[in-house]
Image 1 (cartoon, helix red, strand yellow):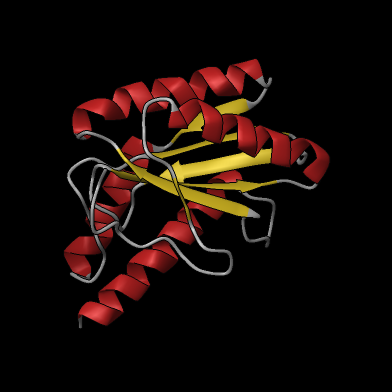
Image 2 (cartoon, rainbow, N blue to C red; image 1 turned 45 degrees about the vertical axis):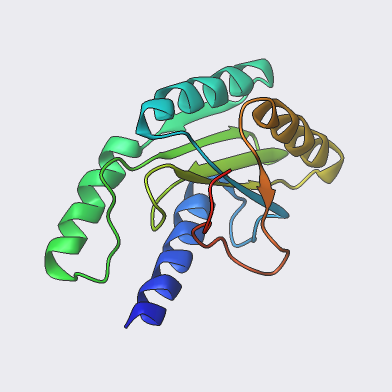
Length: 157
């Protein structure tokens, strides 16, 4: 049962990230994950990503509240649907050139996964690098292995 829940969680994270931040039908070209000190840092993280989006002239969206409600509804019918106590589901898009989706669905509340995508890798890759540099000032960012999925980190450092 635990294996099924983890696979479901990993799939859910990818689906949510791609719905919000990825070009249609494409896996992110880069994924990262990191731990917040706790749920009290969610607002700071969301605000930081909003500011980054503004700096890059991106459309920023926050579906955290709606996603929380949707997952709780699904969980009421299927206990395999993972729900934590404060869902993060944000995204930013600069047309199809580059985008990101970030969230913690299927993860512990304090663990964030970000997927980067874009049709113009000459813009998308430097954007992803800049975001990682910015976030690394505060948090220890881990690269998700290419072709793999994000799983809960065993140790948050």
